[in-house]
Length: 409
Ligand code: SAH
Ligand code: SF4
Ligand code: F3S
Image (cartoon, rainbow, N blue to C red; front, side, top):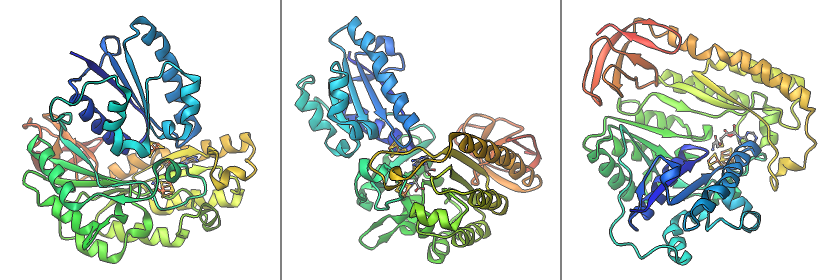
């Protein structure tokens, strides 16, 4: 039996893409292994959002030279966003690489396998890996924005929404295979539209699929959170009350230079509206965008205080070749490090503080093990008693310790 080892870098969309690519390999008789040593095929699914992410993927590829030398029949597939960006350049540098399949190619991955001549024609319908408690479903590919720092639109291409009927079918398959929670995926997931079906309609329809207890989605763009959206979802408790809503900067001036399409005030209005519907909000922040002044940075710190995020992921600005911001002069490295340190210190306590506010509330916990699970707002909760995995327990919260709530059940 041919065995495939999968190394995935990057975002959840890439994780879902790896599953999809595995399905095509499975159709050709491959079986999954988590042991690189015993694998015949390696699928490296790469990210290029920051230089560091791409570097990790390329280093991994470099290390595969020895793995391939051990048994020359082994097959290396280099896929995803860094593969898209680097193209033939990477093939030239690492000639032992067998198949190159960039992110835009995902829909033609099966053809790539056939064209390589390394695989027999598919012998059976490939099965997706078992979904676990959360089933990931891609609902749109690509991005129509042009944030001035971002490489994603160039490596993933323009938005393509998948037909709602296909999405519902996939959600039903995942639920039938045991998923209780469906996570809908897209780079600007809430910009989804298919004919008359809006994103809110889709959320509501997925939540009605038999077996689906909870629906999550990532990552939304602030401008698509309209009052109409909130109105459409507010009476549906199956739509999880947690969003990852990247802000990137707290300064309206920098947001404009980033071409984000909103101001600090608009973002904070969205935060208030989402919170009023019970959502917890996590975010992404970029530190050291080329035009960021001390005052701009202070604005980011004050936005963090005002928004009271559930969590914030902070990244050092990384210039990406071909993006408009890559033409700008970089900030001093030391300034960048200092700002990152200050910001990390500011965001460190956010989650603990959010957990503390939950004592005394009542939560519905979807159990991921016999006595631990997540609430709709994404709080981790430990139950007193044990329950079957996948059940939902409604319970009061007795205490909080760091980023864990203890239930009174
Ligand atoms: N589509 C999502 C973000 C996808 S990229 C959105 O628009 O919200 C994930 C995160 O990587 C971004 O939120 C941003 O914070 C970070 N990022 C993207 N490009 C970057 C760059 N050039 N340097 C540093 N961080 C970057
Ligand atoms: Fe990148 Fe902006 Fe698109 Fe997000 S919305 S993927 S940050 S271009
Ligand atoms: Fe990375 Fe591509 Fe996702 S660049 S963040 S894997 S869309």
